[in-house]
Image (cartoon, rainbow over all chains, first blue to last red; front, side, top):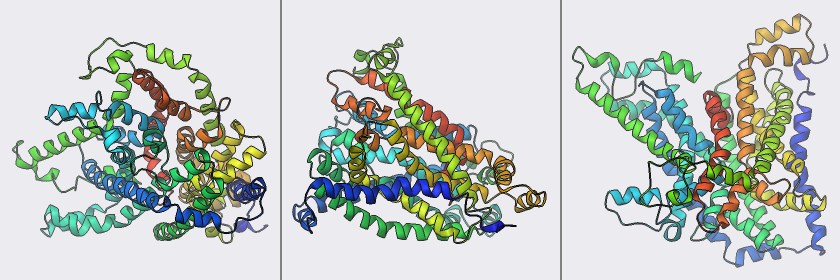
Length: 282
Length: 297
């Protein structure tokens, strides 16, 4: 018996691979960057440039508005759809299957289809649907670029929110709801005082994970707006500075600031996730 | 869990409760129930419509695709599809397939033993191991792209499928470890102990005894890793050019297209999107747990 419960070897290959592919390249790559620059140390010049050139704060606002807007919309829609699916009707499995599809669509394809097929000003389906109810064509792509991003992201992330909230709804004990029914609670009271509090931890999880995914958003912005009209998020700004503006040092400073902000947020997120999964107790 | 609970519980959502319907089939509750079902299908149609419209448009000519008001009835043509392959999409699809399948296989081979050592036979301080894996997932890729790019350029590994594959391995491994951990956590401890008493070696206990029990979960984890690798655009767009180009950046190149390109774009998107949609539909029962990294069953 060589330490039956504590054998660490099965973990090691995976652990090494993960360190090799994530942590190591950052440190190694960082050193390479310093060498390529041919100057020893720029001090805090890059950070001062980042703060004074006036692009960083607007990009934080753009990120908050796009991520926040898509988050709120997809959470509300996801909750409504989860409630619609949390009852028995013919073809429920099919409805659920079709509803998760937007999340599976390649983001690059989704961005292209929304921009050129659905939101196009002259031939788009959205404007056609609006024309049926007498609304004049809207130039979505040129006049409302931020909205087009929010539409696309909401469409893609609503199924994600819906799946997590539906899991929450279905984990609600049937007896509790029946007891509420017997006690004479109406549908609204049951929802307000039983279902919503139960859903809280699921909604928190959905928001945290949704934020982690959405804050990295790059594909629709690069394809649909190229950062025009209040859509220059931090991720896109960093890409633009490094690969279009060739300001690698400045972009690296954005990167470091992003990492710090992410660490603050992730610590919060992880604590919540750990508390959720330790609750199931093994 | 969700499936069994969902079916065993009778309908308890606010609007229509089955037991209440009484003898008259046209009671108010029942009518409301039908209306809600109708509303559900309308919502389903709205959400599915962009995908449906993409598939419909892919069978049009460019002229039909650009017509307004939109044409719903037309003679289908495969011109868009043949044009897509004339543009060389075949190579990009093969690259994507090689990358997604290859990285997924390696991820699963690494993730299964790792997850086992973090759940069924927890190592000392297994929480720290788990924490490390998940923490790498919270790092925005954009923030680490500069060191990655410079490193690959120095090593001459830009536009290289293997380099991209290694990066996808790093992206998907934490997800797979977390998912597998949550599946392994449900293996009955008695089964594991029985295998140990029978003198099974560690690897036999892992691969022959425990893994078959969680096989459906492992398949779902693999499918999700495949989906993420197949759909990845950011790294592929920056780190590949010609030889190792994958499907998403190829689609992105339509942005610069001049003239009418809606039909061919729809055909290319349909080809790119369908494998993943089918994979997702197959994995949907366990999709939610994977996406929630095991925190939701």
